[in-house]
Image 1 (cartoon, one colour):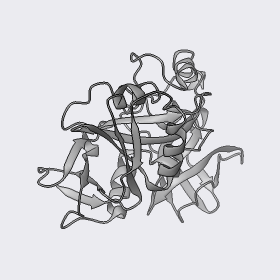
Image 2 (cartoon, one colour):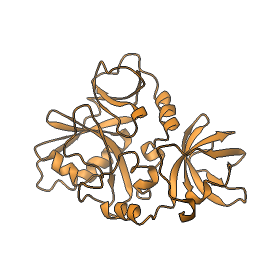
Image 3 (spheres, helix red, strand yellow):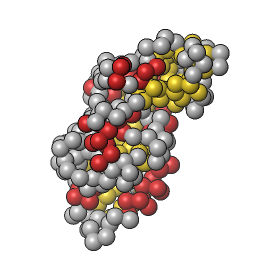
Image 4 (cartoon, helix red, strand yellow):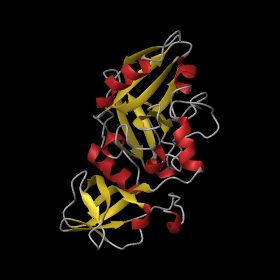
Amino acid sequence: MTTALLPDRGVLELTGPDRVAFLQGLVSNDVSAIPGGTAVWAALLTPQGKWLADFFVLATGDSLLLDAERAQIPMLLQRLSRFRLRSKVELRDASEDWHVHAAWGAGEILEGFGGRDPRLPEAGWRILARTPLAGSETAEAYDLHRLRLGLPDGSKDMESEKSVLLEGGFDELNGVSWSKGCYMGQELTARTRYRGLLKRRLVPVLVDGPLPPHGAALTDEAGAEVGQMRSGRDRLGLALLRLDALDRGPLRAGSSLVHPEVPDWMRLPAREQA
């Protein structure tokens, strides 16, 4: 099994008897009963249904541990604390207590505390350990792994208060529960799905030429802008593209050709509906 230390990830800890009910009413996925050895991928949205952050939730003992972007933890603490009211829950930044790892490939977890990454079987595991695991690969190695699978990586690929979950594949990648009941931003998320309102998707791309920078405009052969580049490494990347651009052949970003590579897990509407 390949393991990579992810220094840009931190841990937010929730304790107290109301911790599960508290989080259940706020995030996009069902955290009411997290089985051992499993992580739940969920997002916090604005009341208008726009993405703010996403994280993996693991349950251990008398706490919930949120594996989140380290830079977003102060924001998460502030926003979640607004909803505590009379709830018996305590929140704290536990990033100094845990080192976050991703693991993938064959083998077993021998150290740390972990849960399967629920997005895809090939995605592997999320592991929290008190000290960095020996023999860990680099974060860049994991970045290439998740790009090959077409998995979004938080603020590298989503825009705060602008992106909607279904653009980022949260439906197919098990980041949304459609049966859990109300949570903040649920109305727009459900309406986008059931009314077929989605016009753009975050799609893996293969780049011929220099890797376009984050935010670079992607154009079709006629010069019309059809999307923007998001995260990337080497020749792999993710781009936010209009659905009706996926059949237009290679796209351009400066001197580079950008080829959309729709993965098998992604469900797209008929192009004429885009």
